[in-house]
Image (cartoon, rainbow, N blue to C red; front, side, top):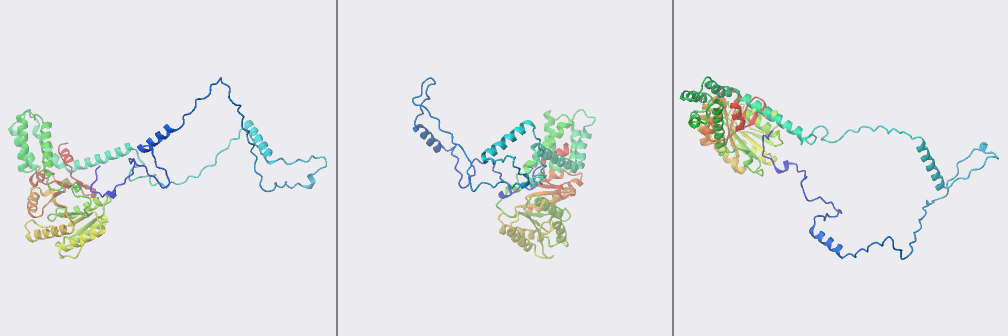
Length: 474
């Protein structure tokens, strides 16, 4: 499964150096000249100048001079110090008739011992049991688990990735289940007991698309494609009809991604911090979105900071402080009524001093018809651009999917002043009008960056148009 936040610094990656061709040499180690051209040429030249070797003499020829074998030197142990003193013998054991044994030299004694031991080993082999070795606990960090997966095979890693993808697909399908029942189920009902597609069927299809909140403009465009397909005999059954609608929806999302900011990778990794400004009206899930964003970005090893610039609404900072405590992300806040631009300025200074990767800025939930609040938003954007080049790098508008076309109208007004670069669509799992995602991409011509498909922290996911279309018609 792909990363939630793909923007990484170069030092965040681990380089194993397995493909490096240059060997690492320590001091005193001779250089490897096996692939050095100059060294090879010098070695060839030296071999060519060496004297030629004479051929060996024939077997039958007599030697010109007798060959005298060199005497083999006898190795004797070096004697150091005085000879060992004999062992003491008790006086009672000495008898006049007992012969006195003379101590053997050291070499002869060792030879006799070796001969006796070899004879004994040849007669009766001695079976020895090795002592039991104590189990030493391993100190390897990869003995039980590994972040890099070094303790697992490629098949296990691929199986785990496939399981994560399957789980994500199932969750997304559950999120758009109501919309699928409204749209795809309605299309199946329209085609029941029909042998051909006529004008009455197209009218019922129009009603189904509008009821899923795709919008009038998007519905008319899709119906034009359907009519052309019917005229060309390309659409003759329900599966062909669904495929045509699905391809048209994917085309709308593809065109929308050409505008705004479709990925955080569009900003260079040397720009720190990456400033995310979150805007929207009250009640759309803006604070929850900020908390989930902070958690998911931090979980992948990024340093995140939250700016509580909503000083207009009572208890706004308190709600954000709860999310900051849950996620373990630092929060920069001031008392209610403070100039939001001042809070943002302090947060930018703190983020730069901490070398934070991402700064998420919460703004006051404002209505599009409040001129003074919209002017305040413009002031915050100017300060952000002065402190960090290009900031805010993304301005995300949070829209509640349940509001449908009303939320689309709010988005149109925000686009006039807020310079929105992307959409966060929340509560997609709680509505049967999930077709609003298509209407937003078509009407606003902006990419949908994230969608909320549940209540859990990891239920805020990167929007995937293919997964969305498959969920509607899969």
